[in-house]
Length: 118
Image (tube, rainbow, N blue to C red):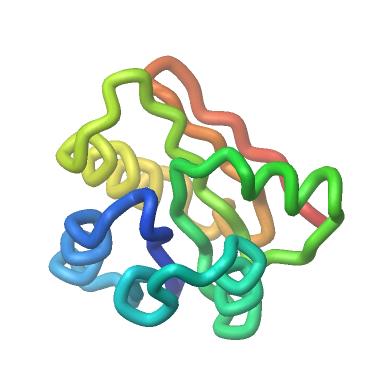
């Protein structure tokens, strides 16, 4: 079963929606409030949780600094509301499932890009 860590930038409503749908999800605002992006990424890796965020700084950590991760879902929505984050994340998880592990996934209103990480 996939596990998730929802970044503070993506909100507790998304974490609650994932839990309601039966997913194992934690909200960083409860377990890592105010911690650095590096600390959030480290926790997600340690607990094998896919990080869900709308903070583009995680791309810097993964691709430039070559930090390891369990997977990242980057919500890049032009109309960014809690409801839309929930809808897009749940749809992605349902459609792509296991492809989300060890991948950097960018999702927008018009596309889904999955980049496998080594």
